[in-house]
Image 1 (spheres, rainbow, N blue to C red):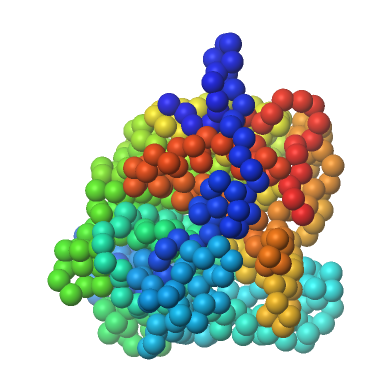
Image 2 (cartoon, rainbow, N blue to C red):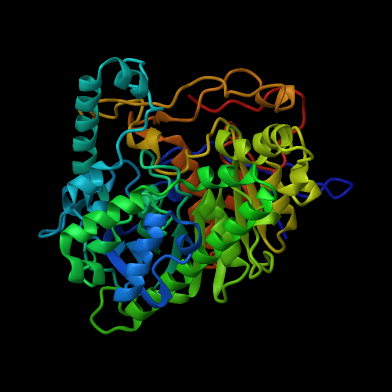
Amino acid sequence: MTLGGGPPHPGGKPGPPEACAPEVPGKGPHASLTRSGPYLVGSRTIFVRDPARPFDPWNEVYGSDDYKALLDHLAEIGEPRTLVTEVWYPVAPPPGCRPDHPHRPPAEQPRCTIPGLRHATYLDYALGDRPLFDRRGVSPELVTASGETVLALATRDPRAHAELVGDVLDELAQRRRGSLLEAPVAPGRFPLVVMSHGGFTGNVRPDSHREIFTSEAEHLASHGYVVVAMNHTGDSRQPAVFHDPGSRLLQTGGPEAVDDAYEILFSQAPVPDRITGLIFQPGGWDLANSMMQRLFEMRTDDVVSVIDAVRDLDAQAGSFLAGRVRLDRVAVAGFSLGSMTTQIALGSVEGLVTGMSWNNGLPKAWEPPRFQGLTRPHFFSLSFEDALSRTFFTDVPFLVYPNVVPGGDPSDFLHLPGERIFPPTRDIPEPVVKTAYDRAEGAKLLLGLVDATHWDVTDDDDYLFPRHRRATGELRVAFDNVLARLPFGDEVLAPEFVGAPYETMSWERTDSGDWIYRPHLLRNYYSVAWYGLFLKGEEKHRRALRCDPFPDTVVHQEGLAPGGSGPPPRGRR
């Protein structure tokens, strides 16, 4: 069963998808999917501690010598696997509050204020620890409002760079999120969505942190879901694991020992660097593939640990989630490496109903033994300007590896013929994603986002530091990703694939004059529709998945772009 198209053409190919009006907040046949739901949103941070698991089993094998010594000490003092986890959930609105008002979000409605509660801030992700929060820095790839990159500014004027970073982090630390900190959960039982973040790509991006799901989790919670996202300790950018009062390291060594441990955790090499450090050794791909399989084993076990923790909270009298979670209605979702974690969990963990994978397929070489294939409903997405995934699954195996390793062949990593389509085409822009989609059984959908990069569906740089100021003085400094043609062309891609220089999807004005981040508009639409159908069983969402309300930015025919030799359609500006 697929959900992407209309009646099949002769030969079994899907027909064109049903047409829907372009979606804007408050308008169109499915406007309720893109605006807030009927609930306010609460959030709180919990520590998931699993005494049955060692603190970081993956880095026991692949960590630095200093980290291995730390892990030995943590084992000696009995520090278990600990996951800093965010929980978002529905909150009953007070009388007169309309969270789903088509033109006035809750923040603009005085009656949506609840006395005694404050909005969570981004500093709360660091548990109020400003020095820990400031470790995130500001990505050198971003562009300041003057058009100069952050890296160029740092080189030209270090003092101005330090002032800029300080101003930006001051603003972000204080910025209100869309959730009320530790508000009471609304009456009722709600489906559970567990989210897995991307891989460790350094301290200057929020890829490997639960905060990348903020806007999506808030949106889903407003529509009646409990959403949890853990930091995968050992593969996470901001692992505040020892801030837990129950931490044995904090109890035995105090704040000084905690600070020393964080220095070691933060010094770990990113996962991509570890892979490239292996693959040019003899038998390097086998070593890298084994490393990734072990990483996904740990990440999948994290999903299970978090679900078990929520189950305990649901059963525990007096807990904030007591009697509030439908544990027979559990989904898993993720981004980048988290999408691969999602696929492995959905293909190996009992009790999961469905999953959503944003911007990555699972290569055969990285499947751990537990993975038994996808038979439950699954959603995939890819982005047409995904430089990161294309570097990993196209540039490295086809262009770099064979030219560095004598006799090296892409099949050393890309084990399936479908994964080795080269160069990528408009019809198959991400062969690993397309192959994973083709191999999946049961209900499935593959979405292609035009003019979107790897990170746009998350709360990454362009969302945290938007190019367009939504209100005068809201941001002291505006940022945007470099808007230029990606650094590859005919030597990597079919000439017609990229077409003219593109612009990434970003902020746009609605008819009411408000700014909205378009990638999140699409993401929210499909998330609410997918979970509405497969977690809540609401058939009204089936048509929302079959139709295409975003014809200028979505390629949506079971993962195949429309025919023709021209460039893909350009998104709205």
